[in-house]
Length: 221
Image (tube, rainbow, N blue to C red; front, side, top):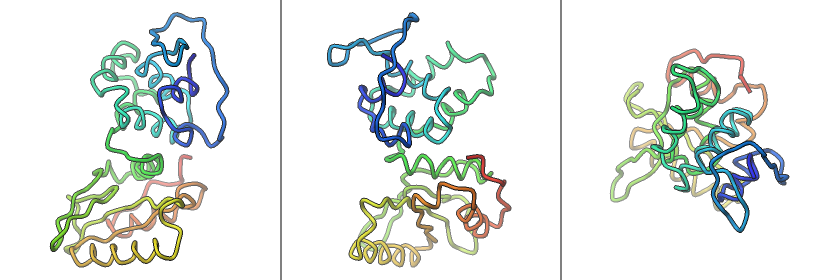
């Protein structure tokens, strides 16, 4: 078994793989390195990562490879070894690019998609799981640019999923947290799923306004 079905068997959530909630099995007759999962022959996690990085749409390619790394079913070293054998040297293919961007610290598909938006807009690769020391407690930001202060403030970004950031109580908690971070010198942009999909670049314009940088537009996806 190969493709998204293989990734699902390796434990990757469907949200990271596709906008569709269901995934059909995909079989291959070509020789590939395989492992056995639940009694089925499945291509290895590293081979799965290469296939997904090459063939999924870019945001899902990144979130899928991030998820494979985050779940520890494949290591960065295994990915690099597989990439060296599969991609030509100095390849500029989508798969090679996705492997370059992939990061085990991404904790959700939304964080992966947000990171790709920032990279595509020309802002550079943000830090992940950025640690902020506070007064008597510490904070963690999904993404941030700690090395690019503007007028004494740094930019952080949080992906707020509907599951954990929709109720009035959750939103009040989030607003209190952003106020505390602002007092510590961090301007935090809250990003929802609707900010990531579609053609209107409100996110890129907001980030560009803070960093004093024109974003690269239009959006690529």
